[in-house]
Image 1 (tube, rainbow, N blue to C red):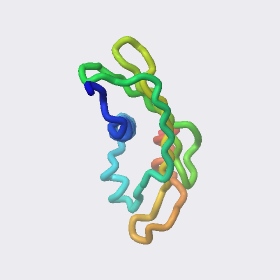
Image 2: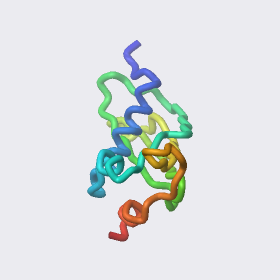
Image 3: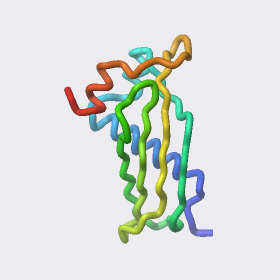
Length: 117
């Protein structure tokens, strides 16, 4: 059909989150080594116009609130013409990697996420 399949937008969100973490000096692997995993527990997508296969897209990611036990992000995907292709949100939970139980965001990461370190 010449358009990007709807399932790919979640991959774009994930890449944007991982790049955001990397920009802050944190890798997801380092979080796992610290005993923290962050599964996605909620997703909201709103498709505005189709992204075409040859489009150059820009994904903007923003942390929406101070992380506690959950971390909420919002996203905007635009094409090369600055048209909004998709808007979305994801919520991730902080879990202890051994017990798989919810936990508070470790202060070490919280200060990085909020730009206090």
